[in-house]
Image (cartoon, rainbow, N blue to C red; front, top):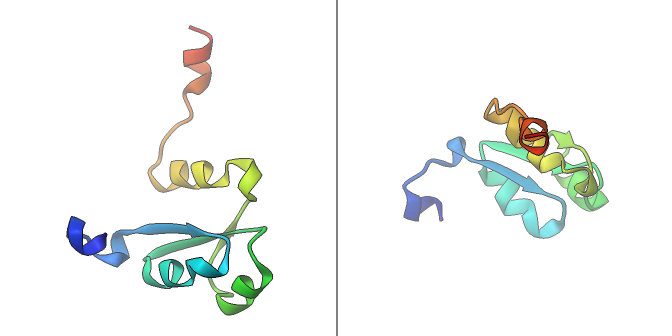
Length: 79
């Protein structure tokens, strides 16, 4: 996919939680692992930052941080 989009891995963020995500997390310039990731994945990639659990919308929260996106949902709901 990176080749197809002509992107450098250093420009990419990746999120993973299981052993099938090893290549993805090792390739991305900004890898993140879920707190409830497979223990073997945590052992294999101990330096990958961990974020919240899958059921906490942690990927969405991390993307907001990475892209400096404010959460304006409340203003849409009350409109």
